[in-house]
Length: 254
Image (cartoon, rainbow, N blue to C red):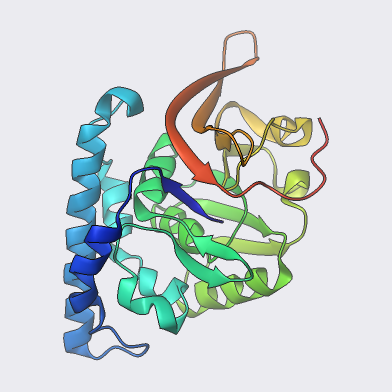
């Protein structure tokens, strides 16, 4: 699903295009080294952005598990071949069906805000390319992810399987319904903007779980929000950063 912060990154995209153009669909050992260097540079850039937004985020550096996942997950495998030259630009990229792969910075901070531990179970609404799910799987959590566009769900499932991410289960369907038979989840991540949180997802969240979601309408300011339960069991919302996501689709019941 599309997501990005509101600041422009076109200049950085142009600067990195020369390096990215070296990345083909099937990389040799030397080309793998180039991609590894690009991932390294991208992580350093994200770390700088996190430091700049520390006041809003509540942390000033990436958790080592998040950082390591970003350094190892091959983002170029989750984008169409025509976009692989820009795989390590910190920007969303089109993946077909009117959707995009999320900006790496947003993937990084959403992954960290989930506050998951190895072995935890995470539900994701909006598989998209599968990149976010792969990052979470690389952090040693189990991921149950639902994508409403069947073609994207099938493609993501094949990509994840080919890369050995066997901790991820992909389903095509309405993400608002969750994955009841796998609940409760230690964390829930929603990768499209919504005006409210449906009760069905809240009911599938563990008592001490977290829910990370962009809140707001497509034509208004959206906020990346974290929901946590208070002592009374009610969800408490904390808004962090202004973002822009496509609206969630499906049966958006109250």
